[in-house]
Image (cartoon, rainbow, N blue to C red; front, side, top):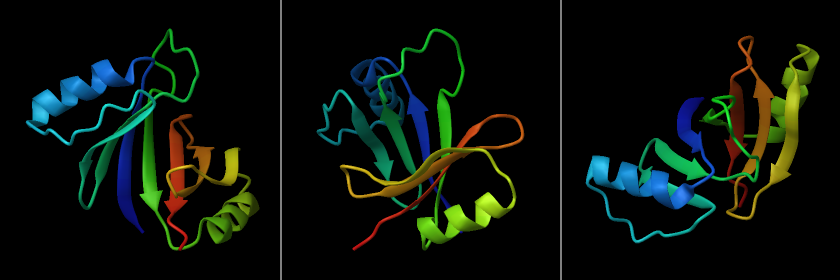
Amino acid sequence: MKVGEVCLFTNDVIRLSNFYKMLFNIDNGSDDNIHQFIISEETTLTVYNDGIERKINAHNICIAFTVDDVDAEFERLKKFGIKIVTPPTLRPWGAKNMSFLDPDNNLITFRCFPK
């Protein structure tokens, strides 16, 4: 397993993405107002608006780990009684994700990229 993505949740993807592009001196040509990759190499920084209104700093960051098989990880984590937030779901950008909470209630995502 390896760290695959750090995702910052926001109500304003354009504003936050432009800040990070400026900060890292990156111009990737993306202007999507819902989902943007800022750095995409071994580890990705993503800015995403999932439609939830954020008024406090709750679940504003998601740590994603790339795994070989999200479905197998889902079954394994259920055996440990881990609170699953979102079961394995194929996303429009091609990833298959599942989300769960760690003991401090931080949002963690396991993902894979089915062919």
